[in-house]
Length: 204
Image 1 (tube, rainbow, N blue to C red):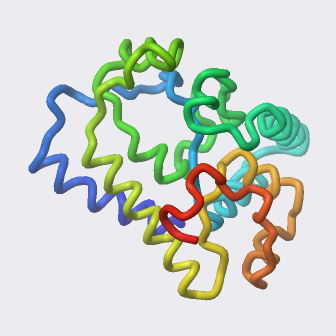
Image 2: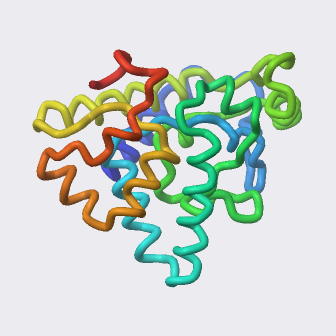
């Protein structure tokens, strides 16, 4: 997962030069409008995030986070991308409107690059009627391609490379300290977190 994130960053530099965005990237610290979106990941990303959280949070902070993850999962499990945006449940990893795992955030979070902060806020306040804000498409396409490659690499190794919904998968990884070992043992530890909306797309 770390290598994939570094690869995505490296690949992203070329289109940023050859196909620069029409206006500067608007994403900034404490701009969390899009953090009500459904995010799909693959198991190595979730395992990396869970490991980071266990190493960096004290017992009370970790317990509080696990409670937020469970609560968010109860409200969002099985929802489509549009349904998730419409109910506006924030990512449980947000702290004071900032990503608490920014250094190990998922590939798709890294790839989403808005060109209009206000348009983002308007869309996520009313996703049904307000169009999605303009973004730097090459960045997101590259992140999606690297995510698919990471899933296929897992599948080629005989491991589960399915697309997972971040909150549901993180709940599994935090509730089960042996989740990584079970995944490596080719057990279906993340089966309940598979993203139904994207079944048949990306890796399987």
